[in-house]
Image (cartoon, rainbow, N blue to C red; front, side):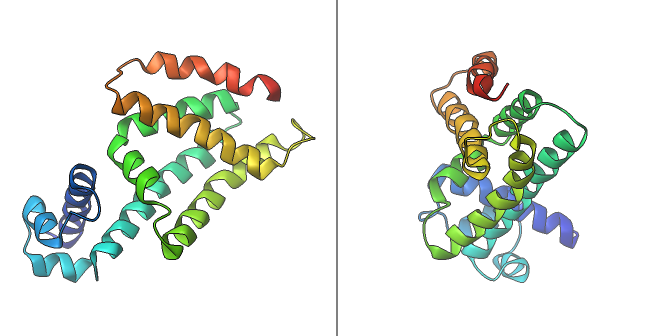
Length: 178
């Protein structure tokens, strides 16, 4: 297996393992077994289980950052962006659950997550600038993220397959910003 393929396989297996077992119960052995690589190969790519978690956040969060910048960079509306976030979270439900459950475990993770959210939400805050003069733009951007991430996770965890209901809350969320 090529190096990048092995790394991707490890990350995919880790995401599944963390999602199913929880971060604490997942082991490097189980990740290696699930990814069909030797345990030494896992350690070749990642120094620790925590390094695997960090790489997962950086990878998946990086995709979300690019998506956000692209959508807003093309002049799309917040409505379009929030729909894209729902679609991303819907497709990345294991990551969403892991992110929301494990992101604030300790100071190191808080820093990583804080950096990710800051980079992700900066273009959103810039977009909001001037549309809502009375509000803190940064906090409003965080509120939009939570207003989409949490209900999407709830829908997925409760077995709802009604993505349209999530889209239907967007106009309500954005009513004040129009």
